[in-house]
Length: 199
Ligand code: SF4
Image 1 (spheres, rainbow, N blue to C red):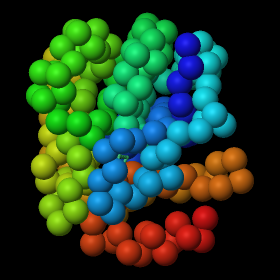
Image 2 (image 1 turned 135 degrees about the horizontal axis):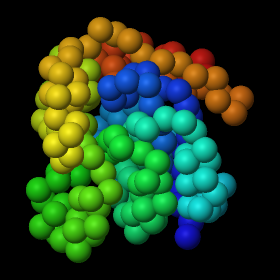
Image 3 (image 1 turned 30 degrees about the vertical axis):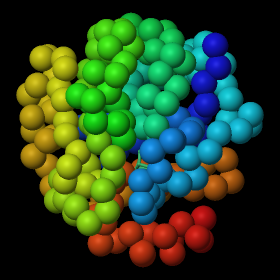
């Protein structure tokens, strides 16, 4: 099975609690205003990867935590589910970001959700809404919500849920370009757009 991938990196420190693997999928149909990840919106063959090969790479990293973002991961739900099944045994903290509102998504895609719910531990949902600034480190706009599905991770994520932004972002040199990891304040958007032009 194939999956569209923008980038994949370890270690990341600014997207979820602890030291993690970061996986950004390619393609997003939601297209929020002033999204900082516009480079992940459009799919083309160069982004396609074999899910088995990607899973082997992820499983070879001795890290139990992974954050999957995008792009919009649920726009390629069958491939995502296939990948998650292949990595589930080696990861016990799988954090998934989606721009869809989870409750509405479940109503529309009940059978997908029945599979997905056991393959992820935490979901952060909702579109990025410009104008809804937030202090919290784990989200870009106030409307977004965190769902802790795995009760074993409640203490870790309850603490993380209360963390406020401290302007920490990670910049990674990646394939002759740069990756910006983390969720900035909306008020820093213009400065970051200027900065990413330098990339
Ligand atoms: S869902 Fe995420 S990647 Fe898609 S436009 Fe919104 S913020 Fe950007």
